Length: 452
Image (cartoon, rainbow, N blue to C red; front, side):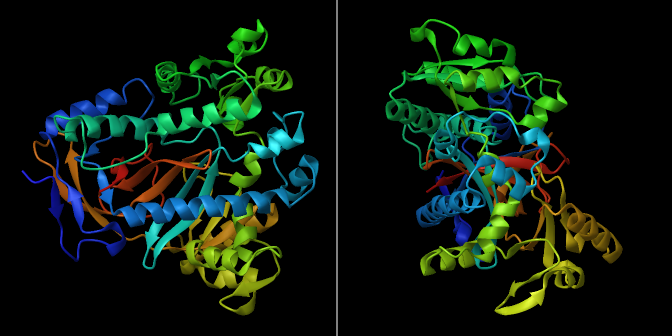
């Protein structure tokens, strides 16, 4: 059987290419392996599973990672220029008081390592890639899932010499290399603390231990620490310390679970570097993307063209004038009158929460949401991008054979220490677009994209 299938034209946007990988095993085998690899991590049960990795051309893969690293650097500069100090930035962003914690004592270190772990999210619009948001945090979703999916696809598609007909970075391997580079740069021992908690809803201990186990089997010493164990990372003999690590949690999740962040602050105060640092929250905020989209005085012509090409029009929502298509408009009036063109997003939010798609609500609901957002002062409006589709093979519960579906994927680029680390993607198996959360809805599914 041929490895590739030529779909021809008319089966999705050209950016995705016209070839896909054929399933390499019976449906029941694929189903069993995928669920086995993600066992005991807290990943939700999915009724629809992929039958093969999603494949895109080499040039398409290179394009989005090349652009993402450039945009993240512009985003970083935009966030840091909002104020000369952390206190100034907290005020500029009107950050919740709960986010004013877990800062390093050295502001240079705090700023230097804010963007070590990033997942830009994009869709393919009518004119190609459009970056919708930038997730900047050590607690990114998609890392364990991509690692697990790739393990299955490599096992099924490898030939007798271990070669596969596709290429993809290994997320754990790239992150391990990031930690090696950090330890060398800081002249620290390559001993890694993976900090998180299995008491957060929807997460189990194996979720964190998988990465620690990978590090330990590839030349790094690593350990998973629950918060109450974290003193053991620094309050011990020097040769036993874990001076660098991954901050694999969010403050809101820990507070919701009733977990104390004090042990993390103690570790930071005693010299542990946990990435991404708390400054990552400024980069993560959609307000930063709004500022970048509107343009900064220091941007070059090349910067502006890059932003215009790859970012949808995004503005921090307030009562003011702004540029729209080369003319000045009253922003609030434009937003109220053009519901079907726009999406309303809170500055901080996860998993599609605090997002209102204008065309999915009536005018009264839109006006109410916009009014609340203006009062809050920490939201953006963004031009709606109609996601384009590609054809994939899916396996449904109880089915012995894959079936074809045209899906509109949201692509999550894993970027660690500036290096491509894999491509996670989520979609609705019924072909619908909009907000995709793998923890909600019977049609939600995920996969990895690879290069052919």
